[in-house]
Amino acid sequence: MATIEPYETKSGRRYLVRYRMPSGKQTKKRGFRRKLDAERFMSTVEVSKLTGDYVQPSLGRITVAELAPKWLQRKEIDVAKSNYRTLESAWRIHVQPRWGDVAVADIELDAVETWIADMGRPVLDPADPEKITRQGSGATTVIRAYGVLAGILDTAVKAKRLRSNPARGVENLPRKTNKRHVYLSAEDVARLAAESGQHRALVLTLSYTGIRWGEAVALRVRDIQFLRRRLSVHDNAVQLGVDHAEGLTKSRKDRSVPVPQFVLDELAVQCEGRGRDALVFGNGTDYLPRPKSSGGWFAGAVKRAGVQKITPHDLRHSCASLAISAGVNVLALARMLGHGDPSVTLRVYADLFDSDLDAVAEALNSKCAQTVPKTVGAAAGSA
Image 1 (spheres, rainbow, N blue to C red):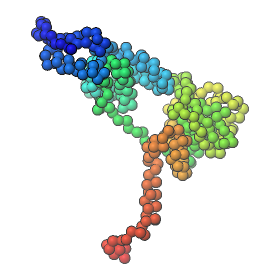
Image 2 (tube, helix red, strand yellow):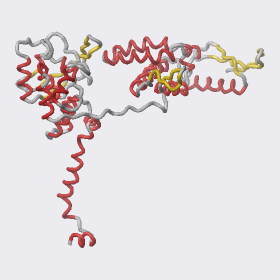
Image 3 (cartoon, one colour):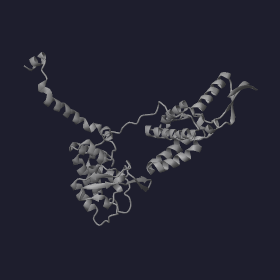
Image 4 (cartoon, helix red, strand yellow):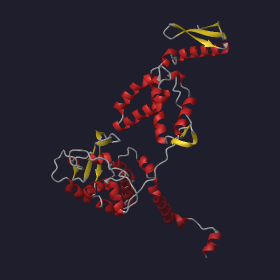
């Protein structure tokens, strides 16, 4: 049974709690200013031993920086290389400077919330408080950094170094704002492809199959099924600096994507003289780098075509728009785009289905209007 003992210090009386850990080994915790605080701690220890939630205090003295390497090693295996790169960057730039030397047992919820708020604030010049030296981090950056810290502390909980994660339950995480989708018409796509020169087939493929840029540049000749009019999409090439890392698709699943015949005709010309294992786009051996946002071939084609400013990824959105306008159902579109759940497609492209709501009203009106008796006022008004 735990006991409480008083002792004297230069600052006055303090209390010490002696108790046994679940292993039977005796330990102690000292420094309580009030006997009441010592009694509360003693009760907490006894209850946690009975419920199996006991955590040895010394295990919580490990720092966040000591736990981080193993967490990052697991993430390097579990996630795509491009995703791991962002996690490692978030740890190095935002998490380590603030939390690296802090023991996990010393982290409190309100301190985490203060850190989140500080990341979003602009940094002011100490010599000139009205001058901003650096803008605050955006919502995506803040959420990612918080996720790294929370993930490392989850590891501490699993290792019985903490009873609960002090970072879970924050209330001030910023919300990401969805970027407005840009949709090109079929005429816009035709002009853009015509201005893209040697990249004409790539633009048409992105616009009419909806595959992602990394999936497109990873396509090999053998992946084009000309007779079935399908693309076999199973690889994704992610650009990391000047190099590329090839891995699985975002959904980690292979998919078969339908291709219009006029796009297949363009791809047939693109593949002439290339072996089955050659890459479809670029020089056939090296991955085609993503075009520069300004001054690159894509930006130049957009300007010459006179279409609204877009990125290569916006062609995926244009494909969704063109497919919906052509009457493709949501389930087929979800499979085409690689969405694991059609609800994702409905949520991402909710604005494209507004016309369906109008169609519902028109259908109900034509089917049911004659069965509903008119009110006297309505009849008089119609007369």
